[in-house]
Amino acid sequence: MVCRPPWPQHNPPGRPDFETTPMSVTIGSHAPAFKLPARPGHEIDVGNVIGKQKVVLLFIPLAFSPVCTTEFCTFRDDWSNWSKLGCAVYGISVDSPFVTDKFKQELSIPFDILSDFNKEVSRTYGALYENLMGLKGVGKRAAFVINAAGKVVYAKVNDEAGQQVDFAAIQSAVESC
Image (cartoon, rainbow, N blue to C red; front, top):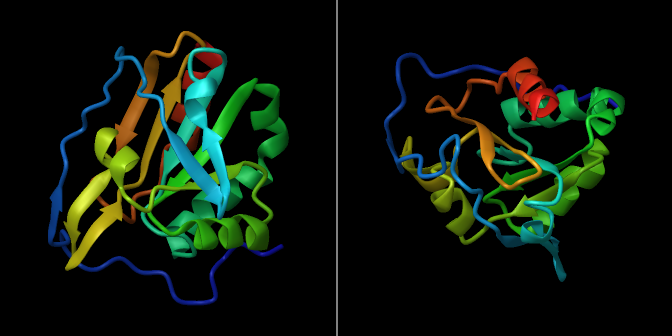
C-alpha cells in the first residue's frame, strides 16, 4: 500500500501563527492513565497497560494529513522491529473515532489509533495547539515513551506541525527502558 498522500506536501513559509499548551508530562514523571475510543463503541483503557509494560504514545495533529500519514506508515512498515521491542504503541488524534478507525483501516496500521475528540488527554500531555493557523484545538505531533514502571523516559512535543518525530530516538528510548 502506498502511504504518500495524493496531494502536494509543503510547509507554510516562516513560523505559523499558533498558541500552545505547556508540556505538563515530562521525563521522570508518572504517565497519566486514560481511556479513549479506538472506534465508535470501543474504548481502550491505556491505564491498564501503563505500569505493566513499555508504552509508546504518538500524538498527531490530524489523520490523513501528509506528515501524519507518513509517520504512521513508517511505524507500520517497520512493525516487525517495533513488535520485537515488547511495547504497546498507541496513536492519538483529536479526530473523531469514526475518522481514527477509518485512518487505521485504510492504511493498515497495526496499532490502535485513539480518538481524543474532547482534547483532554492531548491537553494533559501538553500536546495541543490552542490555535494553529486559525484552527482551534489541533493536536501537536508528540511522542512519549513510558517504561514498565509507568515513568516517562522520553518526551518530545514538536511545536512545528510539519516536523516529523525522531523515529531513532523513540526506538532507542524503548530499547533502553
